[in-house]
Length: 426
Image (cartoon, rainbow, N blue to C red; front, side):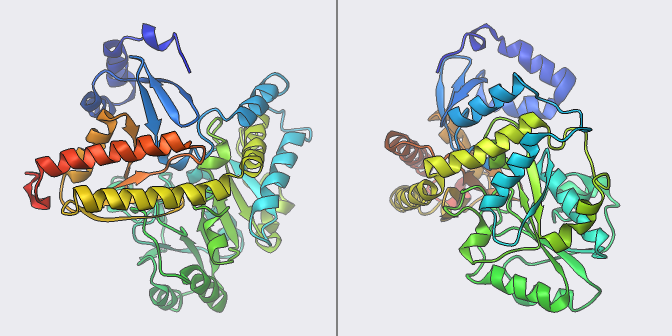
């Protein structure tokens, strides 16, 4: 993987452009990482403008295929050269093929697809779909994350993101994640509701509910006539070592949200997938909820190829094996290097969280990992948790590199902070 473009880039010029036209805050954050800018990617690796290479275990869960997977890339290039954006008047075959491919792998009973561009858009579509059935009351979970557009933000239970934009949607309540009794009590207090939740909370800090929780949620929704919307935007497409988090408990929601990995890491695309009974208003009137670029052929080519690549390369099973290897290895590193600094290393498949024990430690560990050429992510709803979401295309050498970088970062952090409260952060 090589690039010539990156060598000509001037970091100071790019930083100035960020300050003037994008975000001064983003520019300030980037200063922590020096003059490095990412300019190319392939598989699990990023190349920077100074010629460095970084293993990408971040990407907010998008890159289950790695970057520029050959099958997805070829499908997108082929579509660009034929018909990248459709007229929206004539039928367009790529949308039909993408819907069929996705329908082939989702839980039984989900059959109808509405395509969108982002996870938040898929959430908005689900909220509107619920309203066509009279489900105007929304219930989500504390720590959950479903996007930042107005409706999606209403069910993203974090005042940090909500408060600047109030008032949000009315009739929205939140219950503790993983507490089926609390959900049952909430649904018993009012009319038919729409319940929106994740099988495992990603931005909430890789929070894993008790076994059987999704089955309980399904039963409680049925009991109270509530709609069950399962947000698989981050957990789906093989990320958990199963196609979907729902598959871990054999549950079929009324609506499932898909995104991130559906893009194949190339073209942004998301989807709302529903049962025929729930989707009926959208099925009857194709103009009830539309978007200019919804179902664009270039995105549909990416989505279809993304599903096919997971199938052809066995990425679901690979994610399960890699996840177990990494979880075991990372726990061993923490036990040996810095048990005083980490509360827990937890995860399922290739969604792994490192829950730090003191203020400022997550940022310090992130910086150490980047210095060792390993990219990971913060958790937006859990500042103490670093998330590792590597692709399922890691080689054995990549795994060794990741664990070695994690080992070195933990050793450095332990030497610097002998106790969790010795960081000096407040």
